[in-house]
Amino acid sequence: MSISRIKAVLYQEFFVSMRSVEIIMDIIFFPVMTIILFGFLSTYLSGAIGSSIGQRVLMGMLLWDVIFITQYSVSVGSLWNVWSRNLSNMFITPLDIKEYIFAHTLSGSIKSLIVFLITSVISIFVFDFNIFDLGVINLLLYFINLNIFAFAIGVAILGLIFSFGTRIQAFAWGLLPLFQPLTAALYPVSVLPSPLKEMAYIFPPTYIFEAARASFGSTVVHWDLIGMAFATNIVYFVLGVLFFRLMFKKSRESGQFARNES
Amino acid sequence: MSEAILEVENLVKNYGSTRAVDGISFSVPRGKVVGFLGPNGAGKTTTIQILLGITERSSGSIKYFGEDFFRNRQKSLQRINFASAFNTLLGRISVYENLIVFAGLYQVKNPKKRILELAEYFEIADLLSERYWDISSGQKTRVNLMKSLLNDPELILMDEPTASLDPDIADKTLTLIENLRKSRNLSILYTSHNMDEITRICDEVIFLDHGIIVAQDTPLNLTKRITGAQLRLIFDDHKKELEDFLKEEKYDFSFADEHTVIINTKETLIPKIIFGAGKRNIYITDIEVEKPTLEDVFLQIARKEKNVN
Image 1: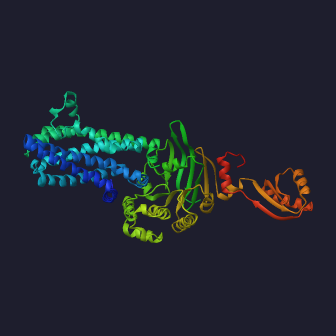
Image 2 (image 1 turned 180 degrees about the vertical axis):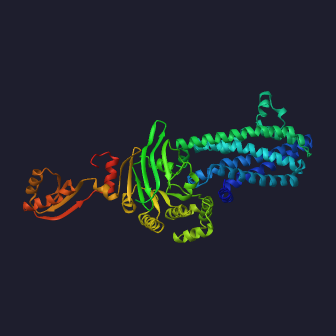
Image 3 (image 1 turned 135 degrees about the horizontal axis):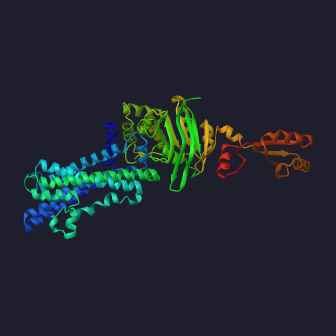
């Protein structure tokens, strides 16, 4: 992998992000507004049924946005090149697909970290909830795990878009909400009805949200849950990468990769 | 014989049961411009996409600079580039930002200096800070050409670089390409539907039809393959004598008016017709010979006529 080429893709991501109102709206404005909404909901719930429930919901939303922003960046980042008929230009250079995906993942992680910091600070000052009470180790482990899951989903969606074309581009921003209720981001898994309860543990973020709720207000690390998150994430990562490779190969064989721009 | 920059051998591409490229072989020598022509659906675009590595071949070999492309993808792509009227850069960001990204992808040393040098050469230094979607088609073409030179390539694949340009800008672009070729000893694989352009800049032309190379030669030799020409004679008032003479000699002719005849014949027979008419005291006041052009060759191939050798 070449650092210069990864840097070039990161520059492109930076330039496009700075010039696109859509990106700013999608990854900064909407998450911030969501946190404000959930912050008020948390304040309301605090008064009605006790402080920790509302704040746990807010914590779940802060962590969910990490997944959303990284996945969005991995999947939608490439669509800007497709929409501008620039994707072929990128891949007729010595740029390798691994470098390209790595750069988009890194860019997504940086964006999600920045937005996480912004929304966390808003939560501290406006809603009196400090997610940093979970401690740096917990947050780092959560962040890594949520990013791996977001990458796996993002890269799989990107593979589908490369293979089937922009007619399914809505998956890039529309598929993730499917996982939000199933991963029990905002409530304990125990709330889910029986078949969904078992299904929830297929998804790595479920363990992270459960771990965060279990550690709420302390720096205790729930290694059992974190370990399960890492274990399932390895499976997701491998499957995501293999699926992407298969779709990418298929799209180059069928000519769809080049046709995506026509 | 100069060194081959690109060698394609027995290249095949199947899309399901459809064969888009059917075992083509050709090469592009150093410093030469090779035209790549064919009607829509002939397999040109597929071939170019395979040559650039964005579409997979079914079989066959491609060598750049004597080395297998598929084993040396990055090394090969570092030394070639592509310019097309149909691929654009990112519209929302500036020309300079687009170019600095590509300079990074090609690992250009001192990218800022390189971009400024090329911008001066293409006379677009004042456009560097403009957003790409705000500049005109002619300016975009120059920016695309500039992008294709960032890595100082030895071969450029050009896909209709002058499409959608007005004749003046198209002519300037062609002049630019001709100058680039001379000053850098560039090799170019050039596709276009404009036969005048092809005749003007190509050293050799490859005609592709239904995925097969149906003709390959210099533009001049290709036009010579069409033996027919159209002779238009303007004569005095001996129409009857001229008609008898042409019938006698079994020429294919028609009268446009009382003093004009159009004769479809072989180019080599034209002097015989003129002298024959003279011997019959037919006074010819004007002669026009329409020789076949590359466009005629193209049309005959596209329409599957058989008198191209």
